Picture 1: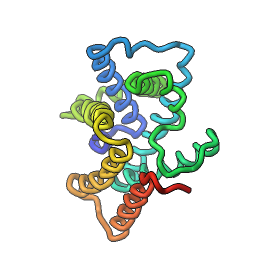
Picture 2: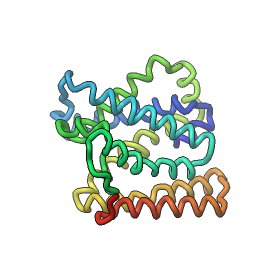
Picture 3: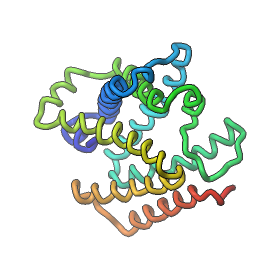
Amino acid sequence: FGKKLNIVGFTPIQIVFIRASTAAIILFIFLLVKNPKLLKIRLKDAYYFMATGIFSFVFLNWCYFEAVNRTSIAIAAILMYTAPAMIMILSAILFKEKITLKKSISIIGRYGLKKYDTLTFTLYTFIVASAVLIPIMDFSEMFELLKGGNTWIFALALGLFATVLPYLLYSTGLKYLETSKAAIIATVEPVVAAILGIMLYGESITLFKILGISLVIYAVFLLREKSITY
């Protein structure tokens, strides 16, 4: 969906705003109906959401969509899977933890998740991400682009099918699966991304790409093994 928006003229940072804002609206409505109590936060805890909204969402997604634009969907998805290695290093530096190969949570969000439900934390991360981008958005240009064809459908789909729904399904899956197993299942993402890139956009697939994808997926499987540590 992000690729579609890029093709019609949206910049990567505009796509990030669309993803954050549509996801925030959808998740807000979901929580309002399901459990309004989860919408409450303390103002003094706003820095948690500022950190995750700006650094964990805006910067990460901006880099991701830039990578999609400059390389391919497959390569961008594979690069995302280098995150576990970075998380392990930061965990050791910031939290003095042993560097284990099984990490399942954002470094910055770790503190805030001790106080708030994950749905609450995610919602306000989206809200902050949207808010900090408002000053640099050219809304007149964005509205013009959204008028073209089915562009607004791709924008809505980016927030619902590529952001909120996957998160809710993954969270629900954790109720029935061990975290390590759920994480391993999630590694199918770069494979799907590569296939969709080839089928929908005619992206090239080379022997080196196949080898790279295979090595990264194999590495992620190793990272999820409880018995393997540094």
